[in-house]
Length: 473
Image 1: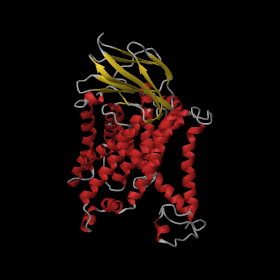
Image 2 (image 1 turned 90 degrees about the horizontal axis):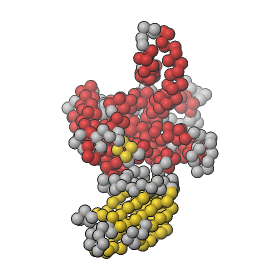
Image 3 (image 1 turned 30 degrees about the vertical axis):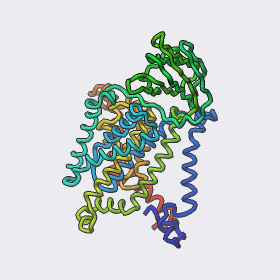
Image 4 (image 1 turned 120 degrees about the vertical axis):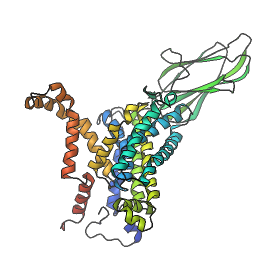
């Protein structure tokens, strides 16, 4: 239904019949919409042009919507197209988030390396929790995937506490590209600090200190921030280098805060000697919300496009046949269990990518971000948006986010004054605290009753009616 041509437009080649963009006008509107998304940060207060047409909070809102669109689209591949229920999707996001943070913090990987590795690791874990789909389905499969929602956070909280921080927040370094431009290389002597200006929100300075020709005990390296504090080795923006004996041979620090930095190297003993160099280079930083916007939004659009094309392949058609009638699909020669596992793998990969982006976008992680209520909320997003439709994830996430961050805050003061008058026998404090879940649950019930197939289904009906006008019958 989505690929129907406008009235009077006919396909003349197989390429036209298989194309997603059926007309040049359709392709033009899609490209203009994507270009408009990329121009949004330039109109904000913190943008490079300094315009005040759009508030900075909307930049963060679009970025968060884009992240959850990726996660819910992965859930759509599993639930909407393959018909396999999952109640542990938030836990898979947590795997991707914490895996990418550990790769960056402990192993020194860049964001660009941590992203695919954490996605693949999440996909493998998704395969493990997809194994019960061989024996059970429906409600029983939902209970099996619910186990992931309890097992994964427990593993992250206790056995891996040394790496994840357990219940404590875990800081995540900002993505950078570079350093690609070295502009200073200085020698430094014992006890003579080197002071210089560094730091920029977009083009950060990468300060590297290297020791060579050390005789005797290794010296102490101190890097002092603009605030006058000695930066510790555990700083999130610092990478230390040690030899096999555990001696500090150098360090690298990403200076994003503007000001004067000082490097001092002091010999540990009077008889010790060493050679040291301090080099500085520029790197492109994605520490700000606007910079991360240009990673998150294009990647979200790309993954939405890939998901739509997956459904057009042999694998996607097998997903749909398993959803509609798995017994008939098996009789037709489709390996049902294999395709169920593929669906779990792809769904977990999407969740892992979303978790990685969420970690680097917020620069901090907490296990509270990946609890059961988040999994249920994403399932509600898919139901409201339209399970089994390419744009279902986008419509569902956008609707829920606007409801939570715009509609409910606007209605909350009015309902807080009106509801206690209708229910005087209930404590007003209890009524106020229940407004958010009442409105959220009410919206979900309305959609289940009035539009059970979701917003995307209504959008497809509207598009078809528009394309075949004036012959809408």
